[in-house]
Image (cartoon, rainbow, N blue to C red; front, side):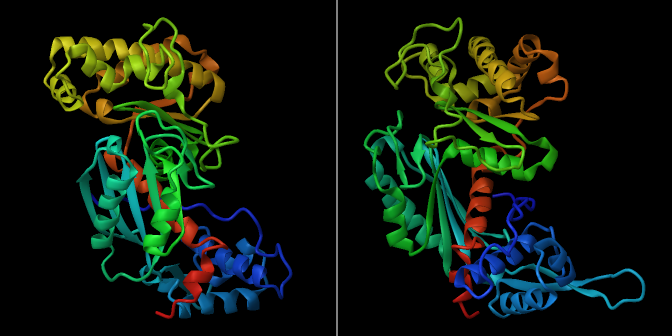
Length: 407
């Protein structure tokens, strides 16, 4: 796995002075705020933290000293100060605080990784799994593989798992995922939490890609819409603040089952007809090429310029472009990112989507729009999981576990 560039972590939006100063809740919020401000790069010295957190100098000094003693923060050199003042100690997140485990599941495989809290990838592997086999055999593989990856890099502070279907993140289970038979209502988070003894965050796989992409790009590239075109078609929505938009029940961005104007009445796995996933995904192109053609075959044919395959990709791009143009009007993103196995095979898909979007959408929605392929490729989901996992570990709910660890 290529080394990922540092990802932007979110600074806390609430002041550390949100609860009574003598309460355990206040202490957790205060320590979390200090750690997250440092992790986000918003404040890198005690003086910075006083200003950014709105806390007294003595409170910040005591909190930082505690975070240093517990191995959550570390000293990372010095930062010059204006005038003749003594250089300030520079603070950074320490790798000694533990690790985050990651499982980014697709339809036919999973990227698994262990990272420390400074975002250093400790280990990574890819395993072949078929989500159609059901949760038990797939999660057996995930658990055994992650167990081998975790090594001796400290306690597991969080586990993030992405799956290719709708999820109820609050209850940690998939909700009627069309391409994942047997997974509906399965307690994924509860099972993995028992195995690894840590909080488990279950996310849709495209949401993870959207978050990873947004945090790898400059902040002015949000709002961002991520469109994944592979076995299925899905979307992830990032707000102008750089965070995931889930909607009321976690269904935001599930664009694969939007009916496309002018598309054929092909039946979709969801039971409806004419869904964009049913007529323009890599699986749909494979079916159009022949019963024995796989998605891997589609990628190979497109990569070598097979005219039939390219013609089908162009048709798919036109249909996807119609959906994206509608979404651009509705959400007015700064950036639309195209990812997935089909996008990686050729620029034909991106070119076709661009042509339709810029032709169909009005100038106000497109005059500053960036429409581009993913910058992180197949590791966008891993990147998003790194962000979620570290932010969970440093949250007010997670900081207590970090502080109880004596390095």
